[in-house]
Length: 484
Ligand SMILES: Cc1ncc(COP(=O)(O)O)c(C=O)c1O
Image (cartoon, rainbow, N blue to C red; front, side, top):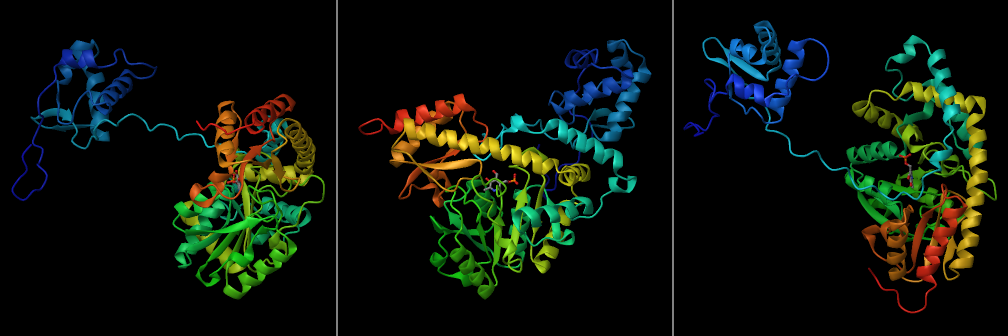
């Protein structure tokens, strides 16, 4: 339709074209599905027809009397359905001009967006061992014991019942400096990183140093949130702090001290001291991702960095490795001034957390059930890690396993980038959750070493054997590896 001289949108004066009662009857889903009042169901069918583009904007509808005759219903049914859709804006009507499809209707949407491609996550716990009945019992306990007031929005930091239990738990198991009042309950480490990125951006300190290699998920989240990410190499003692060349440019350093992701090394005491000194001198925030710190197998878990320097460190953790990522329950403890800004930020995006789930976790912690589950899983994962190492040693002797005896994944060095690419596609085609070391490097490039990040937590004996067989077939063959 031509525009007026002043380019303002044309005013709609009445219906464009008409559809007859018979055409409408043919186009409608009739009789309409479901139960309930016929007028409501007729309104539903008409709404769907309009939304799907079957009746374009401006199309004139037949008078209610003729629609009623065509559908063999009383006129009142059609009048009520028309009125309902006029109230909602799907139809317009004017005295003397009839009823037509509203002008504010959006054009029919395209096909729904396809699901994002699944990401290989080698660090998943064995989800088949999720303690369903214990969680159910804890959930029931939470619901039956919480007061009505607890069903409101509550404290934006999370329920004090969970914060109190977590404070004790983190002091005891992670040597953290933790008080209930200083904990913020978050929807997993990912939410904590998003909040930190926002606060750093707000304060104009938009550059963060990250370990290289690192978890692509965590690193990309910081970058997508708007931070500039610079990589600092990792060696057998963790992040090489001496390679941080311009600390004055940084707002924060993000790292995984207890069990570096993906190499599995532990940050050495010297590097811990150097990092803390650097942070204090340049007013930097150390963001400590304590993602699997509870799973150290042959020795006591390494205490967290935050326990040494709570004035400059933000500790992040979650139950994603100990229970399940689907619970989306995590915690954050930062220096007081920063913590207050993080809580303010959280309130902008989310008024409160899921209190019933929080109270269920509090119950698991208080009753000792959580610790018992972690102990059980530690034994299981330790056994699987040992078995994988033996299988790899037998079937792929030129593959070198790196890192500390802990966590839910291990890094296995392979002879070359070509081996990495081939073995990755072979293992993925067989359904294994594996990552390539190149994917974990900033820029996705191959480095001095090549390797596979293998999640072993949910692999039983047969799967561990199969995996080692496949790695052995690719890596122990003689001659060059053909890429595909
Ligand atoms: C390095 C690292 N940090 C943290 C997490 C956990 O994130 P969340 O607590 O948001 O589930 C993961 C999960 O895969 C991870 O690999």
